[in-house]
Image (cartoon, rainbow over all chains, first blue to last red; front, side, top):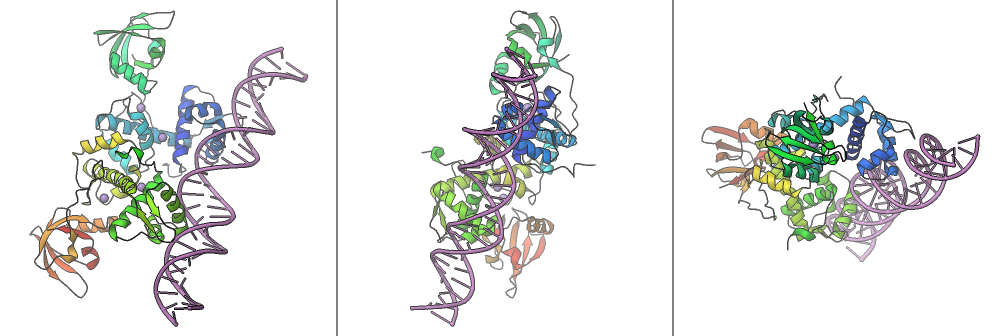
Length: 225
Length: 225
DNA sequence: TTTAGATATTAGGCATGTCTAAAAAATAAT
DNA sequence: ATTATTTTTTAGACATGCCTAATATCTAAA
Ligand SMILES: [Mn+2]
Ligand SMILES: [Mn+2]
Ligand SMILES: [Mn+2]
Ligand SMILES: [Mn+2]
C-alpha cells in the first residue's frame, strides 16, 4: 500500500495538519482548538471550520468539543510536508548560503510545491541529508524518521558532556543569539555549573569557550550524549 | 524610484498578468478577454472579473469591451514573475537534471515564491544566467531584458545558416521531438532545401546530420544568424 | 442601416478560508 | 449541585476565484 489513496490537501490544510502533527508530538493527549489557533496565529472559529474539513478527509479524528487526534493517513501527509520543508531548508543553507535563522519563512512556502520528482531530485542533489539545519530529522519518502535520542540541555547534570544536535525553538532571534555565543549544531559541550535559583547554567563549548546561558536558552537546546 | 510602490498580487493575479504580458508581446494591439481566457484555460466570465481587479490595481488599463493594455507597473511585475520562472527552470535543468520538457509545470509553481533574497541568491548560485533552457532571455532584477535578435527558422533562405537560440513552443511533446532529432539550443544549422508546397524544410545540423522538418516544427524554432 | 453572430460583461451561485458576535458545551469553582 | 468561567462551535459576513446562464455590447454581413 503506497500513498495512492491519500487525499489531496490545499496549502492551508497542509499547514493546519503540520501544526496538529507538531502539537501531537509534544503532549500525548488530544490537540485542542485553542492550541491550533495559537500555533496558526488565527481565531478558534477558523480552526473549528477547518477541523470539520480535515475530519471529512480522514486525516484527523474529530469529536466536537474534545479536540483532535491525527490519523495514520494524516501523519503520512504531515511527514511529507515536513520532509519537503526540511529538505528546502538544507538547500537554502548549503547551496544558497542562507543562515539558519533566515530559512524558515521561505521553506514554509516552498514546502507546498507539489512535484514528487522535484523532491526526489532535490534530496539526491543534497546528498540525502538526514537532518535539517536546526538538527531536526528529515523523514524519508515513506515518512520514516530516524530520530536520534536527545534531551534538553537543562537535564544534563553538572560535569555531564554531550553534543548539541538540535534546537527546539527555530525563531530568528534565538538562532542569532546562538550564532553570537558560538553554540552551533555539532558543538561538544560540558556543563560546568547549574544555578538552581534561576535555572541558568555555565557550559564549556568545544573545550575552549565558557558560556553562561539563561533557563530560556537552556530549555531550547537539545543534546545527544 | 524603485518598485516600492508596486501593488502586491495574488498567485492568480500574477498568472493572469504574465499571460497578458506574453499576449501583448505577440500582437501589438490590445489583448482580448477571449485571448486571455484561451491562455488561462478558463472561462471569459472569470477573465472579466479578474480584469476589473487588475485594472483597480493599475497593472492594466481596462476599457470594458475593448480589451486591455498592460501598464508600466504591470510590465515590471510580469517581468519579475518571468524572471523567477526562468531562473527556476535553469535551476531544475542545470542542478537537478530535469530535461527541458519537464520544467514548465514545476516552474509555474515556483515562480510565485515571494522572497526577494531567495531569487538574488539563486541567480548568483546559477552564475547569473542570461537565458533559460528554452533560449528565452532572463530579465534582470529591474526588468531589463537583453534579448538577442532572432527569427523563425521558416524565414531562413536556402543555404542560409544560423544557430538555434530558442523555441517558441515549450510543450513537452515538441521538446521531446527536438531531443529525438538532435535539435538543441546552440546547434548550428544550415538550410539545405525548402518545400514550398507544405512548408517543410531540410536542414543540416552541426555539419553532420540532415533533418527533415514539417512546417509546424519550423515555425517554432528560433534562429540567430 | 438594420440585423445576425461573435464577443464580453453581469447576475447569481459555489468552494475555500478568514473574521466577529452569539450561542452551546465542557470544565472549574463555589 | 449549582453557578461561573473557559473553551468551542455556529451563524452570518466578507474576500478571492471560479463557474453557468442571461444580458449587453460590438462588429460584420446583408
Ligand atoms: Mn507552509
Ligand atoms: Mn528546521
Ligand atoms: Mn504560475
Ligand atoms: Mn522557459
